[in-house]
Length: 118
Image 1 (cartoon, helix red, strand yellow):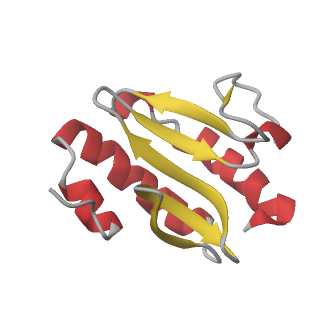
Image 2: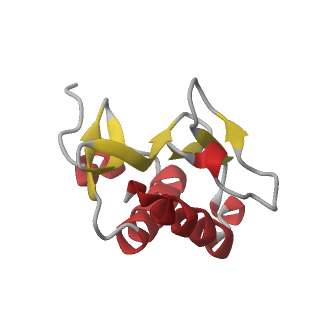
Image 3: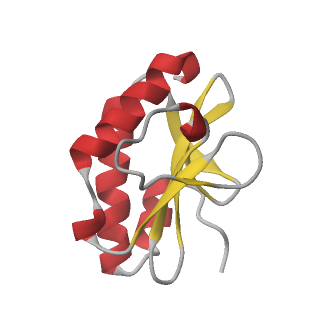
């Protein structure tokens, strides 16, 4: 099977419980990062600003990870964001719809946007 070429194809290939999380994240990322372009990048959906990754998500068998490339530079009063990879990336694992915290995530995305990344 070939890799998905679009975010829609990516979401369509996921089991329903993961696709629901992904669809919610996509709507939130589109709304919060209007100057960024959501597209497939290295096999998963990423919102890019001037070819620089800002945020995205990646599905695994049991969860979806929300990725924030400058997430270590923002304030996270919840303590839910975890350092991811090298550099300043942070992420949070979302196992079900109940793990989504739209107001908190909106604040994270606002802060990323204000860093000038989007």
